[in-house]
Every structure is written in structure tokens, then in C-alpha cells.
Amino acid sequence: MAFYSNRTTTLFKWLPGLILVGALSACGGSDNDDDDENQASGPTASTAQGTVEGVEEDTMLAFKGIPYAAPPVGDLRWQPPEPPADRGEILQANEFGGSCIQPASTFGAAESTEDCLYLNVYRPKAEGNYPVMVWIHGGSLETGSGGGSYDPTRLVGEDMVVVTINYRLGILGFLAHPELTTEGNGASGNYGIMDQRAALEWVQSNIASFGGDPNNVTIFGESAGGHSVLTHLVSPASEGLFHKVIVQSGSYQPTQRTLGTAESWGSGIATDLGCDTADDVLQCLRDTPAEDFIAAQDANDYSFYPNTRQDTYPNTIADGVASGQIAQVPVMLGSNMDEYRLFVALAELSGGDLTDNESTFRSQISGLTGIPTGSATMDGIVSAYPWNTAAYDNDVSLAFSAVGTDAVFACNSLDHARSLSSYVPTYKYEFSDRDAPSIIGDPTNYSFDLGAAHAFEIQYVFGGSEAVLSAIGMDADQVSLANTMVKYWSRFAKFGNPNGSGEPPFWPSFSAGSGEIMELAPAAVGTQTESNFNTVHRCDSVWLAD
Image (cartoon, rainbow, N blue to C red):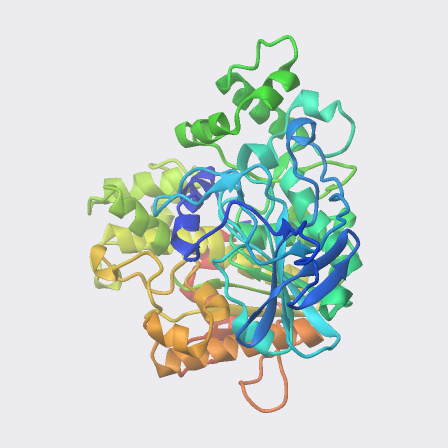
């Protein structure tokens, strides 16, 4: 199994400010109490809680800020999600719900609130029974939102219904504690995952009213969202709520905490918040202002993961995938060629330049993997990534980025593809557009090329219309690649197979040992061999070696 460490998740905290490009409203859809105005003039849909009225947006209909669960506030803080209240009036579903409580991002704070369990539905204008794609956003399970960051125009244009969701984050979403466990609801530390599952249950109950087929649901996500998708894939509690999965850069940290370890970690957080000596620890925590959680997350190197427990999540991702104890559904998964360049670039932007010497290189690798700097294993890694050669422009930053890409993302993804292909139809990709538009500002701000970095592929799927893609700097070949990716993603969601008649190029399913991997690059979409991917990313020779 590939090496990993909490450092990677710490660095993921940068992402929401980079991806969130739309303005988020702190309130969801609003109930209309005026009898005259309560006659809907826009598109409507019926849900179990009442009618919602959406808006027409160019080529699609949008229903924003629909509550899929009750606000998790007061006594519902650190409780499984409850059903939302019934409504007597039409809900004006024309504004995004607030993002869940989270630290301010480096690139501008999004408004956030505990009342955040909302989702958004986008559908074609024509009536139909369309396949459904449910997007789970990334952000280290600590930041992010399903709101205005993601424009599904082109996916909807492929006759899809797209749902984006919010879920509880950070301490409010993933705190485990012995006192929470004694409440006996099987939720301690997994509230955010349970929110995601509640959203999927809402889809099963309501999506037909939006023209969606509840029997053809694909869950997909990137980074922590992809990791969440894998969590649902191995969880018996989520089985039956989806029929296909797409994992974008989510195969990191495949071994989660046990409940006991998570409880110990959570007890430390209670201490940091000054609640460890309270007569009633849980009441102290529930009375703590949400702003104090944000401050604690900013001040401490917390990392957030679901925990394994016999009643709901008996297997880690690693064990479930390896043993085939998964939902038996088709899987598409992949990674980006230069994933870790994003994190090294952001560290550089905040003053963390890496000195070009071997001591720095070894210490950075040790911080990422936990391997001692002077060990024989470290000697082998340094030999495999000769930073002071033309291969890396004599640049420790580029060499360390390659180490992070391979150790954290690429080789875990390959390992998962090899295992999954023994049990379910599996399709593997690598996004390799090294000239992709930067999502972190002017690329000349950095001392090296950003390449096909972490999260850079999202804009190719969720970047909006072709005109928008051109406006953000994509050339004709890149726009064509974006259209190809949308076709692959939507065809996979429709059929469990990314192929169709004619273009784009045929994508073969993956078979361990002789597999083919779809390379997603401008004017060069085509397959590479598993052997080539394995060699480039040093998987069997370094990171997956016994």
C-alpha cells in the first residue's frame, strides 16, 4: 500500500478558496407567504416536504437551496441528520444555501452557517427520465460547498440531471468522542458522511419529480469528495443508493481511523476547546459557539476522516476495495499527472520556498511519508527521484511534487484500479493537460510550471459553456478535451461504460496486469499502458513495493 500522512490533508485546506468562484448566499430557498405570489410562475417540482419553484437558466432549469435535512443546530448538533420540516408554501428555490461552517479560505472567506444541509438540482428543460449525477465536493472534509462553484451546464446538455450537495464539515461533521458514541446512534465521527447519505436518500425519494431516474444514480466527487465516494462504495449502509461511481483524485489515505482512535483524537479536540473538565462534556461542546470550532481548526493541525465501526462502516477503503466488499457497481477513477504541484505551489506562495539541497528534499519526503531521513528506504526514494538533474530542472520543488503525486495519489489510484477490476467493471484515467488554466491565480507567481495539478480537471467538467471555457483561457484543443471529458463522464453515468457510437476515442475497461489507462490530454486523448503509468509514477518499484 502506498505511503500517506496527515500532511496531505492539511494542505487540502487550501482548496476551497481556489475552486469557489461563485458567490455563495448564506440562506437557502425561501418560503413565500404571500398568497398572490404563492402562485408559481417558474418551473416547479413536488417533493415530500412540498412544492419548490426553480429558475430558468439559459439551457437548463435550476432548483437551488433545497433543504434535504433539518438544520443540524441546537440539540441536533452531532446527531444523525433528521428529515426536513414539511412546508405549507411554495419554496422559492432560487438561491444557494449557505456553506457549512468552515475556516476562511486563503483566497477569500465564504459565508458559512450551521444551517447548511441544502442541495441543488439542475435538469434539462424537456421532460424525461434522465440519469442522475450527484456531486460531492472536495476540501479536506473541512471546507467547500456544493453551491455556485460548479456549473453543470454541459453535463445537463448531455441529458443528465445533476445534483450538488452541502454536508457538515470539520469538527461539526467528523468529531468522534466517547460521550458521542454512548448516545448509541452509530454516528460518532461520521456526521458528514451521514449527511451525504441523507442527500442520496432524498434523491431516491424526490428526484423523479425533477425528471431524474432514481434507478440510475451516479455519485462522483473530487479529492475529499472522491474519498467520500469510496467510503460509500465500501459501506453497506449506503448500498442501493447509487448505481455507478466516479472517483477523481480521491484514492489518498485509504486506511481510515478506527472508532477508538477517532475518539481519542476527538477527546484531544475537546481539551483544546476547554470542555474536557466540564461536568457534561457534550453539553459544553454543544454550547460552544461555532466560531470557536473555526478558531480551533485554524490553530491546530487537525485532519478529518470518517472512522470505521462495525455497525455502519466495517471496512476501511483499503480493505473493502482489496477484498471486494463493495457495492457491485461500475467504477471510473483516476488522478492528475502533477497532483502535488498544487500543494507545493501554495506553500511557496505563503513563503514556504524549498531550498535546493538534499537535506531539504529528505526532510520534506519524511514529513509527507513518515520515513526517517537517513533510512535505506529514504536512500532508495532519493535515488528514484534525482532532484539535482535535468529531469527536475535541478529543482527540489519539482522533485518533491513528483514524490507527492506518486505516493499520495497516482499509485493508490492504480492499486485501487487493480483490485476493483477483479470485482466490477473498472475504467481508469489520467488527466495530463500540463497547460491547463491555473485555478490559483497567475501561474507566473510560482517558480515552476503548475502542470496538470490537483483539482485542475474540475473546470473541464464543471467549467460552464464553451464560451466560459474560452474566457478562462482554454484554447480550441482544450475546449475539445473538456467536451470529450463531459461525454465520457455522462456516458458512464448513463450506461456504466464511457463509450458510445463515434467520438470520442474508445476507452477500454481496465484489467490488472495488462490494463489500459485513458490519457486525457489536448489533441492527444488515447490510452497508455498500465506498464507505462507504473513506470512513470514508480508505483511497483517504490510505493507499492512489499
